[in-house]
Image (cartoon, rainbow, N blue to C red; front, side):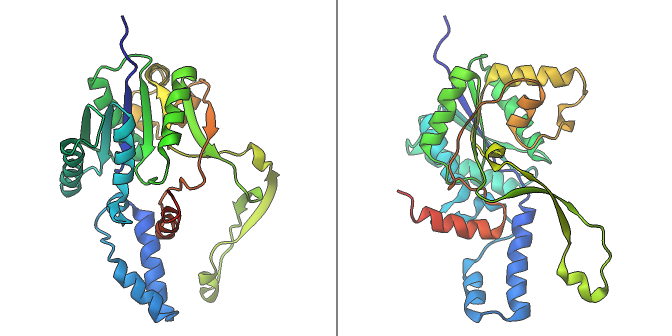
Length: 290
Protein backbone atom coordinates (compact mmCIF):
# COMPACT_ATOMS: atom_id res chain seq x y z
CA UNK A 1 0.00 0.00 0.00
CA UNK A 2 1.35 3.43 -0.99
CA UNK A 3 2.18 5.68 1.96
CA UNK A 4 1.91 9.43 2.29
CA UNK A 5 3.09 11.54 -0.63
CA UNK A 6 6.46 13.02 0.24
CA UNK A 7 7.72 16.43 -0.83
CA UNK A 8 11.38 17.03 -1.67
CA UNK A 9 12.51 20.65 -1.75
CA UNK A 10 15.55 21.71 -3.78
CA UNK A 11 16.99 25.16 -3.01
CA UNK A 12 19.56 26.31 -5.54
CA UNK A 13 22.16 28.68 -4.08
CA UNK A 14 25.23 27.72 -6.10
CA UNK A 15 25.49 30.71 -8.43
CA UNK A 16 28.62 32.84 -8.73
CA UNK A 17 26.66 36.09 -8.26
CA UNK A 18 28.71 37.82 -10.97
CA UNK A 19 25.92 40.18 -12.08
CA UNK A 20 25.24 41.18 -8.48
CA UNK A 21 28.91 41.94 -7.83
CA UNK A 22 29.33 43.91 -11.06
CA UNK A 23 26.23 46.02 -10.39
CA UNK A 24 27.37 46.80 -6.84
CA UNK A 25 30.83 47.87 -8.00
CA UNK A 26 29.36 49.88 -10.88
CA UNK A 27 27.17 51.89 -8.51
CA UNK A 28 29.91 52.38 -5.95
CA UNK A 29 32.59 53.29 -8.49
CA UNK A 30 30.16 55.52 -10.35
CA UNK A 31 29.44 57.50 -7.22
CA UNK A 32 33.14 57.93 -6.53
CA UNK A 33 33.93 58.85 -10.14
CA UNK A 34 31.21 61.46 -10.47
CA UNK A 35 30.92 62.49 -6.80
CA UNK A 36 27.13 62.38 -6.95
CA UNK A 37 26.58 62.39 -3.21
CA UNK A 38 28.90 61.82 -0.29
CA UNK A 39 25.91 60.61 1.74
CA UNK A 40 25.08 57.85 -0.76
CA UNK A 41 28.76 56.90 -0.91
CA UNK A 42 28.85 56.63 2.89
CA UNK A 43 25.67 54.55 2.88
CA UNK A 44 27.25 52.09 0.44
CA UNK A 45 30.36 51.85 2.61
CA UNK A 46 28.15 51.08 5.63
CA UNK A 47 26.54 48.14 3.81
CA UNK A 48 29.78 46.20 4.16
CA UNK A 49 28.99 43.65 1.46
CA UNK A 50 31.61 40.94 1.18
CA UNK A 51 31.90 40.40 -2.57
CA UNK A 52 33.84 37.19 -1.97
CA UNK A 53 30.69 35.42 -0.81
CA UNK A 54 27.63 34.54 -2.93
CA UNK A 55 24.63 36.88 -2.78
CA UNK A 56 22.45 34.23 -1.10
CA UNK A 57 24.64 34.59 1.99
CA UNK A 58 24.37 38.37 2.23
CA UNK A 59 22.19 39.61 5.09
CA UNK A 60 18.69 40.94 4.47
CA UNK A 61 16.97 42.38 7.54
CA UNK A 62 19.08 40.40 10.00
CA UNK A 63 19.03 37.03 8.19
CA UNK A 64 21.01 35.61 5.32
CA UNK A 65 19.00 35.65 2.09
CA UNK A 66 19.13 31.84 1.87
CA UNK A 67 17.64 31.48 5.36
CA UNK A 68 14.28 32.88 4.27
CA UNK A 69 13.85 29.99 1.83
CA UNK A 70 15.21 27.37 4.24
CA UNK A 71 12.85 28.54 6.97
CA UNK A 72 9.74 28.32 4.79
CA UNK A 73 10.68 25.02 3.17
CA UNK A 74 11.42 23.46 6.56
CA UNK A 75 7.84 24.15 7.67
CA UNK A 76 6.27 22.40 4.67
CA UNK A 77 8.45 19.83 2.88
CA UNK A 78 9.77 16.45 4.03
CA UNK A 79 13.34 16.72 2.74
CA UNK A 80 15.35 19.86 1.95
CA UNK A 81 18.35 19.71 -0.39
CA UNK A 82 20.48 22.86 -0.64
CA UNK A 83 23.00 23.24 -3.48
CA UNK A 84 25.91 25.55 -2.58
CA UNK A 85 28.74 26.88 -4.81
CA UNK A 86 30.84 24.19 -6.44
CA UNK A 87 34.21 24.65 -4.74
CA UNK A 88 33.40 26.93 -1.81
CA UNK A 89 34.11 24.89 1.32
CA UNK A 90 33.53 27.85 3.63
CA UNK A 91 29.99 28.44 2.33
CA UNK A 92 29.34 24.68 2.39
CA UNK A 93 30.31 24.64 6.06
CA UNK A 94 28.23 27.74 6.87
CA UNK A 95 25.17 26.24 5.19
CA UNK A 96 25.56 23.02 7.17
CA UNK A 97 25.72 25.09 10.35
CA UNK A 98 22.47 26.84 9.41
CA UNK A 99 20.87 23.45 8.66
CA UNK A 100 22.01 22.06 12.03
CA UNK A 101 20.57 25.08 13.81
CA UNK A 102 17.13 24.50 12.29
CA UNK A 103 17.29 20.79 13.13
CA UNK A 104 18.63 21.31 16.65
CA UNK A 105 16.11 23.97 17.63
CA UNK A 106 13.14 22.02 16.26
CA UNK A 107 12.37 24.66 13.63
CA UNK A 108 11.72 22.05 10.96
CA UNK A 109 9.19 19.39 10.12
CA UNK A 110 11.62 18.13 7.48
CA UNK A 111 13.09 14.71 8.18
CA UNK A 112 16.47 15.79 6.84
CA UNK A 113 18.28 18.86 5.50
CA UNK A 114 21.03 17.88 3.07
CA UNK A 115 23.70 20.31 1.87
CA UNK A 116 25.59 19.50 -1.34
CA UNK A 117 28.08 21.16 -3.66
CA UNK A 118 26.38 22.44 -6.80
CA UNK A 119 27.69 22.40 -10.36
CA UNK A 120 29.22 24.86 -12.80
CA UNK A 121 25.77 26.00 -14.00
CA UNK A 122 22.30 26.26 -12.49
CA UNK A 123 21.21 23.24 -14.50
CA UNK A 124 24.15 21.13 -13.31
CA UNK A 125 23.38 22.15 -9.72
CA UNK A 126 19.80 21.00 -10.17
CA UNK A 127 20.94 17.63 -11.58
CA UNK A 128 23.23 17.09 -8.60
CA UNK A 129 20.39 17.92 -6.23
CA UNK A 130 18.04 15.63 -8.16
CA UNK A 131 20.51 12.74 -7.82
CA UNK A 132 20.49 13.34 -4.08
CA UNK A 133 16.70 13.13 -4.17
CA UNK A 134 16.93 9.90 -6.18
CA UNK A 135 19.17 8.38 -3.49
CA UNK A 136 16.21 8.82 -1.12
CA UNK A 137 14.09 6.63 -3.45
CA UNK A 138 11.14 8.88 -4.28
CA UNK A 139 7.95 7.37 -5.68
CA UNK A 140 6.32 8.53 -8.92
CA UNK A 141 3.66 10.67 -7.26
CA UNK A 142 6.04 12.29 -4.77
CA UNK A 143 6.57 16.01 -5.36
CA UNK A 144 9.85 17.73 -6.26
CA UNK A 145 9.99 21.48 -5.63
CA UNK A 146 12.74 23.56 -7.23
CA UNK A 147 13.45 27.04 -5.90
CA UNK A 148 15.94 29.88 -6.45
CA UNK A 149 17.70 30.68 -3.19
CA UNK A 150 17.86 34.29 -4.40
CA UNK A 151 14.05 34.59 -4.10
CA UNK A 152 13.56 35.10 -0.36
CA UNK A 153 10.17 36.86 -0.39
CA UNK A 154 7.82 34.12 -1.66
CA UNK A 155 5.07 33.21 0.78
CA UNK A 156 4.36 29.88 2.45
CA UNK A 157 0.92 30.14 0.83
CA UNK A 158 2.50 30.15 -2.65
CA UNK A 159 4.66 27.14 -1.81
CA UNK A 160 1.65 25.18 -0.52
CA UNK A 161 -0.43 26.19 -3.55
CA UNK A 162 2.27 24.94 -5.94
CA UNK A 163 2.59 21.62 -4.11
CA UNK A 164 -1.17 21.04 -3.97
CA UNK A 165 -1.69 21.72 -7.68
CA UNK A 166 1.26 19.51 -8.61
CA UNK A 167 -0.33 16.67 -6.64
CA UNK A 168 -3.47 17.02 -8.77
CA UNK A 169 -2.10 18.07 -12.17
CA UNK A 170 1.52 16.92 -12.14
CA UNK A 171 3.01 20.41 -12.35
CA UNK A 172 2.65 23.92 -10.95
CA UNK A 173 4.72 26.95 -11.94
CA UNK A 174 4.05 30.43 -10.54
CA UNK A 175 4.16 33.41 -12.89
CA UNK A 176 3.20 37.05 -13.18
CA UNK A 177 2.35 39.12 -16.26
CA UNK A 178 4.17 42.36 -17.10
CA UNK A 179 2.62 45.79 -16.60
CA UNK A 180 4.72 47.43 -19.28
CA UNK A 181 4.30 47.38 -23.04
CA UNK A 182 6.29 44.45 -24.44
CA UNK A 183 8.04 44.45 -27.81
CA UNK A 184 10.68 42.36 -29.50
CA UNK A 185 13.96 44.18 -30.00
CA UNK A 186 17.22 43.73 -31.84
CA UNK A 187 20.57 45.38 -31.40
CA UNK A 188 21.78 47.65 -34.19
CA UNK A 189 25.33 46.82 -35.17
CA UNK A 190 26.83 50.27 -35.12
CA UNK A 191 30.39 51.40 -34.55
CA UNK A 192 30.90 54.26 -32.12
CA UNK A 193 33.63 56.84 -32.03
CA UNK A 194 35.75 56.88 -28.89
CA UNK A 195 33.74 59.81 -27.53
CA UNK A 196 30.42 58.00 -28.07
CA UNK A 197 31.33 54.64 -26.54
CA UNK A 198 29.93 55.59 -23.16
CA UNK A 199 26.49 56.00 -24.74
CA UNK A 200 25.89 52.25 -24.72
CA UNK A 201 24.21 50.08 -27.34
CA UNK A 202 21.36 51.16 -29.60
CA UNK A 203 18.39 48.89 -30.32
CA UNK A 204 15.53 48.87 -32.80
CA UNK A 205 12.01 48.04 -31.63
CA UNK A 206 10.01 45.57 -33.69
CA UNK A 207 6.73 43.70 -33.05
CA UNK A 208 4.52 44.41 -30.05
CA UNK A 209 3.58 41.34 -28.01
CA UNK A 210 0.24 40.93 -26.22
CA UNK A 211 1.41 41.25 -22.61
CA UNK A 212 -1.57 39.26 -21.33
CA UNK A 213 -0.01 36.26 -23.07
CA UNK A 214 3.47 36.78 -21.62
CA UNK A 215 4.44 34.91 -18.46
CA UNK A 216 7.32 36.00 -16.24
CA UNK A 217 8.26 32.71 -14.60
CA UNK A 218 9.00 32.42 -10.89
CA UNK A 219 9.88 29.73 -8.38
CA UNK A 220 9.07 27.65 -6.34
CA UNK A 221 8.10 25.23 -9.13
CA UNK A 222 6.55 21.88 -8.21
CA UNK A 223 6.34 18.65 -10.24
CA UNK A 224 5.53 15.02 -9.66
CA UNK A 225 8.69 12.97 -9.72
CA UNK A 226 7.28 10.78 -12.52
CA UNK A 227 6.91 13.90 -14.70
CA UNK A 228 10.58 14.79 -14.19
CA UNK A 229 11.61 11.18 -14.74
CA UNK A 230 9.69 11.05 -18.02
CA UNK A 231 11.41 14.26 -19.22
CA UNK A 232 14.86 12.90 -18.38
CA UNK A 233 14.16 9.64 -20.22
CA UNK A 234 12.90 11.64 -23.21
CA UNK A 235 16.11 13.68 -23.42
CA UNK A 236 18.40 10.75 -22.63
CA UNK A 237 17.40 9.19 -25.95
CA UNK A 238 18.98 12.07 -27.84
CA UNK A 239 21.88 13.17 -25.63
CA UNK A 240 24.61 11.22 -23.88
CA UNK A 241 24.94 13.76 -21.08
CA UNK A 242 22.03 15.53 -19.40
CA UNK A 243 24.45 18.21 -18.22
CA UNK A 244 24.57 19.54 -21.78
CA UNK A 245 20.89 20.50 -21.84
CA UNK A 246 21.42 23.77 -19.99
CA UNK A 247 17.84 24.62 -18.99
CA UNK A 248 17.37 27.74 -16.88
CA UNK A 249 14.62 26.18 -14.79
CA UNK A 250 12.83 22.89 -14.23
CA UNK A 251 9.78 24.02 -16.20
CA UNK A 252 12.00 24.30 -19.28
CA UNK A 253 12.97 20.64 -19.01
CA UNK A 254 9.37 19.48 -18.66
CA UNK A 255 8.03 21.73 -21.41
CA UNK A 256 10.71 20.60 -23.86
CA UNK A 257 9.72 16.95 -23.36
CA UNK A 258 6.22 17.59 -24.76
CA UNK A 259 4.50 17.48 -21.38
CA UNK A 260 1.97 20.02 -20.14
CA UNK A 261 3.16 22.60 -17.64
CA UNK A 262 0.42 24.27 -15.58
CA UNK A 263 0.72 27.78 -14.21
CA UNK A 264 -0.53 29.45 -11.05
CA UNK A 265 -0.64 33.11 -10.09
CA UNK A 266 2.70 34.14 -8.64
CA UNK A 267 3.50 37.04 -6.32
CA UNK A 268 4.85 40.41 -7.43
CA UNK A 269 6.91 40.73 -4.27
CA UNK A 270 8.60 37.40 -5.10
CA UNK A 271 11.50 39.12 -6.84
CA UNK A 272 14.80 37.46 -7.67
CA UNK A 273 17.82 39.25 -6.25
CA UNK A 274 20.06 39.37 -9.30
CA UNK A 275 21.49 42.89 -9.14
CA UNK A 276 22.47 45.05 -6.18
CA UNK A 277 19.43 47.25 -6.85
CA UNK A 278 17.21 44.20 -6.26
CA UNK A 279 18.60 43.85 -2.75
CA UNK A 280 17.56 47.41 -1.96
CA UNK A 281 14.08 46.76 -3.41
CA UNK A 282 13.79 43.57 -1.31
CA UNK A 283 14.66 45.56 1.81
CA UNK A 284 11.82 47.95 1.06
CA UNK A 285 9.33 45.14 0.35
CA UNK A 286 10.19 43.13 3.45
CA UNK A 287 9.55 46.12 5.69
CA UNK A 288 5.90 46.06 4.55
CA UNK A 289 5.34 42.29 4.73
CA UNK A 290 3.49 40.85 7.77
